[in-house]
Image (tube, rainbow over all chains, first blue to last red; front, side, top):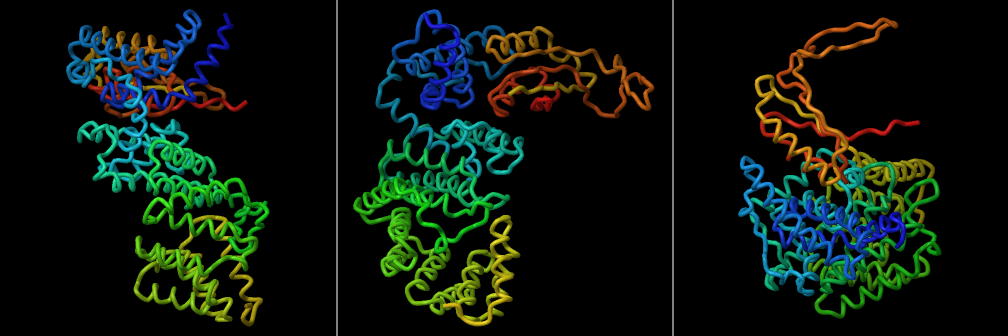
Length: 421
Length: 110
C-alpha cells in the first residue's frame, strides 16, 4: 500500500483534473449550486479518508459524484431530524433526482455545458456572468478573480452570492439551450469568454499590459467549449484568441512598454499558435456564413501570415472588414476598417474615415479612435491635428503603458516638422 | 485559506440562539474538516480593555464603544475561498439574530 502522502497527492490531482466535472454533475443532481459545492467538498474529504484504506476506485469521478450525492441527501435528512428550526433543512425543498440514471454518460458529458450556459445566463448581469464562470467552470477562487479584475474580494463575493440567489429564485433551468435559442445563448457564452480574454490581454486599467492568467483561462474555456460544442463561432473565437495570444511576447517591450503591430519583432510571434489559430479560422469560415468571431480571426490570420508589415495583404483585410461590418455593424469595426483602408490607400483615407465617424458623434470618448487619428495626421504632417488628437487620447486612457506610449508620440511630434511617409 | 467568522449580537439577543444549536453548527463544521477553533464569549460587561502607553499598562472595564452589536463569539475556519467561507458563515445560527463578519486571516510576514 502506498504511503498516505501519495494518496493525498492522488486526491489533489483528481481535484485538479475532475473537480469541475464533479461539481457540474452534482449541481444537476442536487439542483442547487451551494448544496452541490458542499457535497463536492464532502466527497473529496471522504476520498482522503477512504482511498488509503480501500484503494483508489476504478472510476474516481463516478465515485466522487455518487459519494457527494449520498452525503448531501444524508446531511439534509440528518439536519431535518436534528434541527426543526432550520427552514433550509426541509428535505422536500431540494429537487433530488432519486433514480440512478444520473450516471448516463451523455448526461454527464453535457453537465459541463449546462454549467457554462447557466453561469452565462442572460438573466445575470455581465460582471456576474464573468465571476460565476471563472469560479464555477474554471475553478478560480474568489480572491484570484478579485485580484485579476482589481476588484475588492468582498465585492466579488457578493456578486457571486447574488448571482447564485438569482439562479435559485428565478429558477434558471440547468440545461443546454434548445437549438432555436442556441445561437443567442451561445453568443452570451462567447461574449463572457472574450471579455475574460480581453481583460487579460489588454487590461483596461492597471500598470501591466498583459494579465496572462486571465487570457490563459479564457483560452482554456474556449478549448473546452470547442470540445463540447464545435459550433463555427466557438471555433472562430478560439482561433481569434490563439492568434492574438501568438503575439503576446512581441507586443510588450522588455521594460513593459506597448509595441504596436507594425513595430513588433515578428520573430517573437508564436508559430505554433498561429498555425493552430489559422487552421481553426479556416474551419470556422468553411462551416457556413461566417460570423463576427470567424471574420475577426480571419483578419488576425492575414496579419499573422505576413513576414513584415509591408507584406500584409491589406486588400484582403479590407474585404474581410467589409464582411464584418455587414454582419456586425458597429463604430468600433468601422474604426478598425479605417485603419485597414489607411494601410491600403494611405493615411489620408484613414484620417478621413475616422473624422466621419467622430463627426457623427460616435467614438468621441474612445481613446483608440483619437490615437489612430493622431497617428494618421502625424504621417500627413498635420502636426497640430495630431497633437490635439494625442492629447484627447491621453485624457481618456487609464492604462500606464498606453499613457507612456502616447506621451512618447507627443514628445516626438515636437521634433518632427513634415510628413514621415 | 483561513477565515475568522466574528459573531456580533445585540445584548438582548445574547442567548437568543440555544447553545445546543451552536454546538451542532461547530460539530458540523468539524465533521467537514473546516473548523479550526470556535468559542462563544461572555457579555461585553465582562471585558477588560488593555492598552500600553509609554510603557504603562492601563485597563478599562466594560464596553468602550457605543455600538449596538458586540462580539459574542468566533469561528476560525478553513475554506477554499471567500465564497466558501461566506457559505459556512451563513450557517452559523446567530446569523439569524445578529451578524457574522468574515475576515481573511493574514499571515505574519517573517
